[in-house]
Image (cartoon, rainbow, N blue to C red; front, side, top):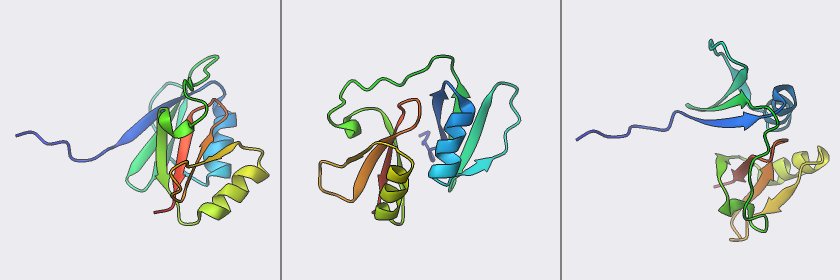
Length: 121
């Protein structure tokens, strides 16, 4: 039987790649990964997983359930200090929504509205 072995990457759209790099590299602290493709984009390494940002003119991610960001499409990342990330996000004027479940997790949005969950597990 064929088996799925692991997750390799998630692809997210960005209307302004440099602005998004500022979020993923400078605010979240993700390491940029090399890429050799010939279309506009940036890759970020998260352990063995990658986040691929690709250019999309006038992109704004949909958020059909704005009251609870975690019930929308999102990328979840494990962090070591949720309080420090919350402070960093707020210091950079990023919106934060704490998990409604009461667990140590929060949701934020990149500049194009892509939702990112940060969870301390």
